[in-house]
Image (cartoon, rainbow, N blue to C red):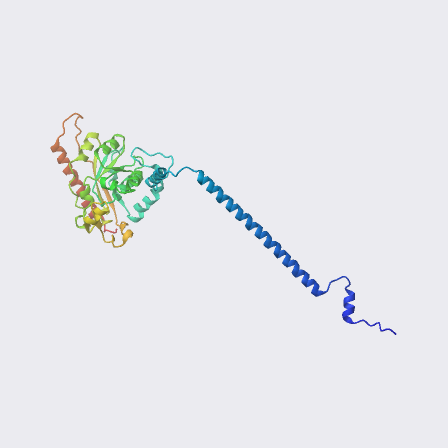
Length: 351
């Protein structure tokens, strides 16, 4: 009789009729993966070829445009660079700027910094504001306190804070400081004006109070051992300006600003090399480099004195030189008295 037994492997194989063997299925999967990988590589190759073609076409197009461009104009480039360098740090915008350059937008942006310096850094105390005239129009005369005009900036800010009904005073700035790079535009935006008789007359006649420092360079370049010794007031320009414009002449004493940058001695030769009258040597400069330029956080006191008694002659009356000289010295002595009074009132240099 024929043997009808079927081996287990054959039975299993016959049970899966139409299904490929396991080895055949694995080989088919590998071939499909290889075909997908080949398709991906082909697509990547085509994409790279398209990118290469695009880059070459753009490069050739640019080259053709450059070949058609006229010869480069170096004069135009130079003028553009000069214009950009000349306006470095300046922003072109429409804003109200007066004839002396004071910018209300810059003042508004700087007010928080000025408040910090006034309240926290120098802790400035004010006295005698009741001596200011009712309309605020006057010529304020103070002692000069150091090379940089922190005194004028802080005093004008104080009057704007405590007497907002007045026009913001303009503080006069020495000629040599105006000529330094980037200094003049910044100071002008904050109310600084070049110190000269013409500018003083123009400001007073248009209703602007003026802060003057008639010591000039002699006061700005005092060394530390000469601090708070008020120097001679020039030739009486502030007295003539007050009389001619018929405005009160108000003395002011500022204490603390002269110690913010204590000048130990003056190096003239290095200063001339950088365009300055001298290079100030302080306890922090030049030893600490740029950090030495930061002012010290000294305690300030500003005292406003009573206006001087002035006689206003007729406009065509001849000038009395003796009277002008006497009033100038009287004004200097009054400023010195206010400074001495402030030193006695202040507890210490650091407050």
